Length: 595
Image (cartoon, rainbow, N blue to C red; front, side, top):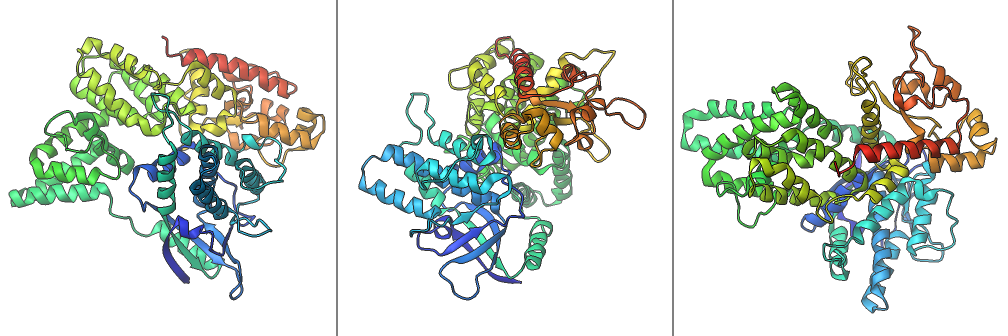
């Protein structure tokens, strides 16, 4: 089944002398990675030692015999490989801007260009992305914008689609300025980052057929669970305690089970707790480890080895105590948390506020009398803006919250809220009104689906009354959200004729341009149940739809968000713009940092 499997550095996969052409077949879905994926890849490459392992890629070699170009069909791994290629293009663009006429830079640019495009007159791409969603054409346009290719026509609204957003995200990260206004990635650091990208590795697995690829893919994804950092730390603690008191193994195992019960059965929560425990309490001499200012995924095992060697009994007891507090943060409804705080902690989870849990763990342990509800409510507003704008960058959040903790330690309970606000509203640590408004006014759904839904739900909840209260976070028996984001003007590739007529006076080309430019704007989004039943239906069908009991489930469902839609007879770009401005104003007031 497997013809070959080899762990190769990216520099070898995309070597200027290799003859591999990676082709994503036309039937595969379009590029779907989002900002969190781009940020995680970028940070993993930069924060880990050279040689970082990026996972595996499954290919089918369709080349008959030995040919000049080896045609490899990418069955699994297109998202990662496409992203890496976009990152190379971004580095090329930034290096070209700062390199001037330096001969070493010219040589590096030559190598970078031909990692993405074969040498020779045909300008053959080393990666051919999927044709779905204009991915192939947009990719060529990106290489043109970067200065790697020339002559391709850029399709309308390419900048609103996912590939361009990824490319420009990487450009933004590489162009970032520090607190002193200097580039974080100066020429020296840019070269260091490029070296780490080159040295990162992928296991490339070649198989003989689609059947083999499918079987292998299923096997890789469904058989076996790798030993985690949590497992290794648990084994180390229990083994150390058993050596000191052999008869305590059962008691300690039950104690570990109690610890995990507080953290839920979600490994993400468990592993994050171990990192955030250290980051929250490293100011204590019992917890601090020399040369470890921050616990990360790459050094967490090393940190806990030191702590276990120092005093395993004390560490185990303190971890259990803090896990009980952490359980209140991640599951506030289960632990008798005051209603006002529980509501805000739920919102913190819904907006993706896990980076702030480290602060709350500290506050619950050492500042329990502070106004935690108001602090959490402020953090929700702060993180809505941060998660939409990426200001400050995700990688900076752990250090920022550690710094906030250090400042709070110097203050009393009554001063805690003011200190948290002051520290987070320091220059460079928060998204300005202009930056937030700019994101709210653009293709917000493409930038962050979860933040978009949270903002829409928050606007709706503002206008709800006790007499008419809708739980927008309710889930069905399968655990899926009942109320979902609905695109009024459909986002699908195939635009129905009645929408072409309504939105663009029958001009199909213009309708596609409007779809790319406007469908993901706030003004074209609402909340409904039965989203899958609405889809590409006409405005009238979406507006007037009822369920089997005769209750309105379309735009006449009684939600404030649909007040302008329940009587709508047409839907145009002007309507989208107008509603966008209205909802942006609502969101700016709702998530103001001044109150």
